[in-house]
Image 1 (cartoon, helix red, strand yellow):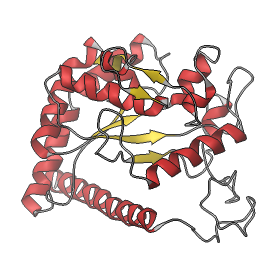
Image 2 (cartoon, rainbow, N blue to C red):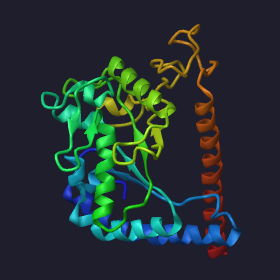
Image 3 (cartoon, rainbow, N blue to C red):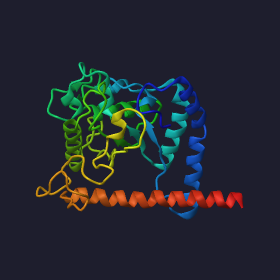
Length: 288
């Protein structure tokens, strides 16, 4: 169910994706069944990333709802996630909303900087940043399909440090501010206004700039590092004695909570590797 990060996908592309989506949940069920057989289902969750484009409405957050074209597969997916107690993952990029409407959306609101924010007219919840508003819109969309207790995480978010002439806001300064402020909130285990007591898991896109990636300039400039391993900009992961041009031989100066997040990340990486190995093993057995 990963649609394009932008909203300008073609109807042919959408139709093709919808055809492929019919196989998504059955494939996830097969992977989960394999994990159950090996006793790994207690440690490994099966889910899939989704683009924010699966939403028909996202503003205000309480109006969040899925596109009619994906309601069927979303119902199947959410039913599976509910039964396996797995999270729903969303790729959320406030940058795209700002790029499309820079005169209507305050830059500070999308960068997590101090700002008046917005109040949802129906829930009266106050939002001081767009990312949390987008996440809560997903939660409301799930609730409209009858699923109110599924955890939501952000599988991708980030900000480009360079862009074309029409890609407003794609600068090193904005990218550094967005990621630094996001990191600060992650270290506080902050939740969204709708789920204040539930920490929001977020994965930053990306570690390296993808210099060979096609498309707009911004697509090649989401990384914290350049392809030659030099730092694109420092988001606070280096000690103060090191410059922003230091190589990867750096000292991570994070709190103990960040160290815990790193450990969790390593564990999840191992789990995903196990899934791939299991999938390959199943394919080999079926073929031979």
